[in-house]
Length: 132
Image (cartoon, rainbow, N blue to C red):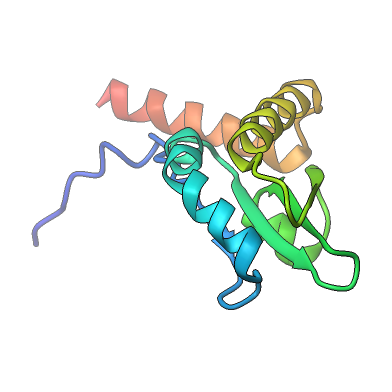
């Protein structure tokens, strides 16, 4: 029986992404988001959370949200949101500011019981693999 080495198991590989509902943005916001997309993607790619961009058609604005995907789906957890006018060309600056605000909130937030358990078992796993 062959046993594969799993030395990278405890290293986390974050892949933050930009989530835009297909067909959600009208012409003007879509044009500005496309213009800033590569710069925003570069800023978010190594983060443990995502950016969600949704248009509020009735209110003529766009909501940009920084949140972990699992929390966003459940509508709970740590979240940072900004409203941007439809006609505004400020998505790169808004995204950068939102990322910084969310990271500050993450650093301030107390770790949950689940997070503490994960940290404990990760350290235990590392210790056990080092002893072998």
